[in-house]
Image (cartoon, rainbow, N blue to C red; front, side):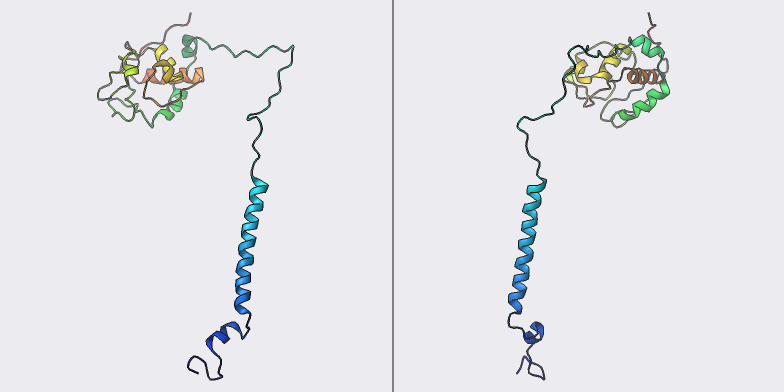
Length: 195
């Protein structure tokens, strides 16, 4: 035998151990493993798939009939907030702006214009920056009041602005940032006086 060894056993007989059902057993094992895998996948999908509710949303408890609705705390006027503002806290809060703006004098434009000396500077005129038509249409100078409104809701203040920032809802945080911006000037503009 050319393909056998000295004992007359072929390589296939050595591999299968002489069992005529060896390949049936191998095929059966593969088929059983595949069936188990598919079965576990179907079972786990059925077990862990969330059921879609008939009505999407959450059912919140209704307020008691006699209880008055809690009113939002009124926001202090800007001059009062500026009087209590902390430039150091404003600098910390302004770190969320550094992806798009620089605060150094003469710093380059990034995605947004440089902010050094922005208070009482003409709107939409920073050299080398292409402003949106919405901001160009505002005209005038950047007052503390306008900066406060812009920081609160950029798209509400200047519809069509290209600034993608959602805004800062916390009024005192905005005042702190304005106090920081005041320090970024060769001749800082005084805050408006509280009445």
